[in-house]
Length: 302
Image (cartoon, rainbow, N blue to C red; front, side, top):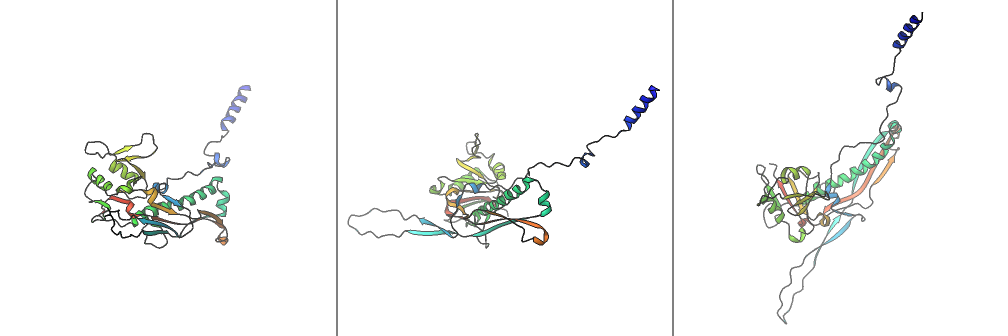
């Protein structure tokens, strides 16, 4: 009888079901990490190098042209006076705007970090717009800033400021030296060379000078990217492949943003839909202050 009872108990135990990881979600709710992992953004290295103004809209920066050099004087003779040449570069006020919309239900059900992420993302979107304009703004399209590409690039003549390599040709040490030599000494003080990451490693990383020494020297302390021909390198992903700019960005390239970035939320615009709008708004402009302070090296695309 005891043996029968044991056998019956074993059979009952074997018939019991147990919870597996496949059925756990029905009992235990899915947990979400309270953070939002973002993909990498387009990096604008020149944004941290150039001048940042926070002045009222329509700020005008006086730009003086150096006068002609003095001359030797014959004692007692008349001396003609000269005029001081002064022009201004004006920063206008253009709107930059970005809007995210989220339903009221999604907002209630989202993790605590989501709203913070939206605020950070809106701010980053505005700054990325300015970073791109500092390089690619053409200065012709209404309602947007201008950048390095708005400069008139001349490959010939007395105002030459652009070394262009044929599409079928390769970058050489001689062309890089020619590119650096185009910038006048006065502007070369504090100048840096800007390019994107692909250009640095595909073009310059293995390039050697006449003595078979690398022209790019990495910074072993990681305080900067490194130097090319003694000039610091700036990485900016907004710059096109096989294109470089050389100049004093800290002094002669800038943007103006008078009131910073305003982040606001509103239920009114989409009241009927039950949607909440998050908006980032900034008034800004970007501009090369002195075009002569920059030179360009690029490879033709056609």
